[in-house]
Amino acid sequence: MIYEVFRRERKGQAFEHAGSVVAPDTEFAEAWAREQYGRRGESVALWLVPRDAIHDVEDWADEFDLKYRRVDGYSIKARLKEARERAAARAG
Amino acid sequence: MAAVEIPQDEQAFLAYVQAGGQVETADWMPDDYRAKLVKFIEMHGNSELMGVLPEREWILRAPTLQRKLALTAKVQDEVGHAQLIYRVVEDLGKPRERCLADLVDGKAKFHNVFHYPTKTWGDVGVIAWLVDAAAIISQKALLKCSYAPYARIMKKICWEESFHILHGRDVILAMVTGTPAQFELVQEALNRWWGPLMQFHGNPIPKEEDPMYLWRIKSQGNEEARQQFLEGYVPQIWELGLTVPDTKLRRREDGTWEYGEPDWDELMHVVTGHGPKTDERLAFRRRFLDQEQWVRDAVLAA
Image (cartoon, rainbow over all chains, first blue to last red; front, side):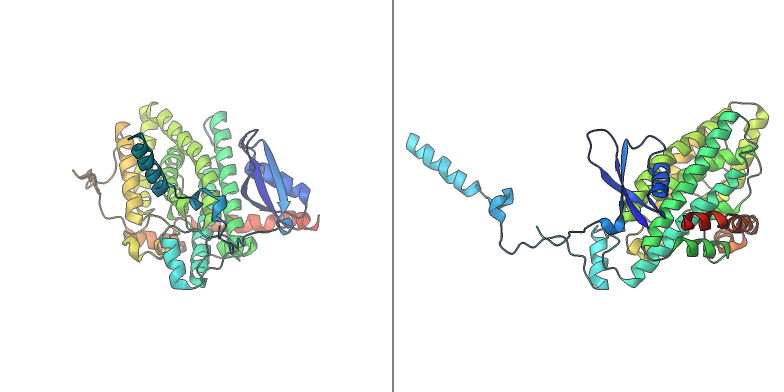
């Protein structure tokens, strides 16, 4: 069985994918993951996840053009310029 | 946002990786790319596994307990690298068992430097310092490999290799500050290893013609790597009062190193399985592979 290994480098940090080990069960997987990803103190915690248990999401449809929810949906340069010019005109 | 689409035809895929695009295990990839990846990464795994043998020979003969422990740790690291690397190869479709079988049957290659004997403790120092230095130059360039799982593993490997180089340098420094006989051991080892070291990065074909560069498996050409090695390490060798056994070696005004032509026939001869220690070391691997079969069987039956 293939186990994906995630490691946390320091407390408070997110777990990050590190690699994988092949093992017949969780006990062996732990022994080998400790050896491969923790024996130099480079991890404070590991997650071992059977590869089959991972639900992969990769398809990001954007049919409805939802740009209004993001910063790249707004271009204020021209409007700001006009607003400043009007303000200057008003101030005379 | 839409995920970056991996192009599904060979030409577009090539353009994608050449523009710095990275590929994951489950992505579509051209057969040629997959075959080149397996060949390259498997050879790297083989080299890690075979690379421990010259050093292993010195664990029992290390001059101090501290050196013995450090050498053991280094051997352990390198076997660990082999395990990580074979895991990447397995995900590309070639099981580890088959990699090992091909290795002991002499069907697969490993780096030239691991086909040579380690005559003295001086050789151990030169290997740990300069062979590892040459290897880390290649490995650092793999951090940008177009195949992302391999690039990620390389991060960990490079991190561990930095200890190896320092350990090697420490061994060398202890000897060059020791007795004249110790200094001589280092000089003799350097004389033995310089040829193989200069061959290590391969013949200077233009990188545009190197299929491994074309697919961006490697991110630099062979000559680039060798120049980087010379630039980084020749001054360090010279400052210790050691002599590099190449009368043509010099640094040009523009920073390029000139050197005597490495023996490319020797390289070809050695990596095709005719090195002075090739048979003996493969026989050793074969013996242990057979001998430890019961461990693998027992684990799989668990």
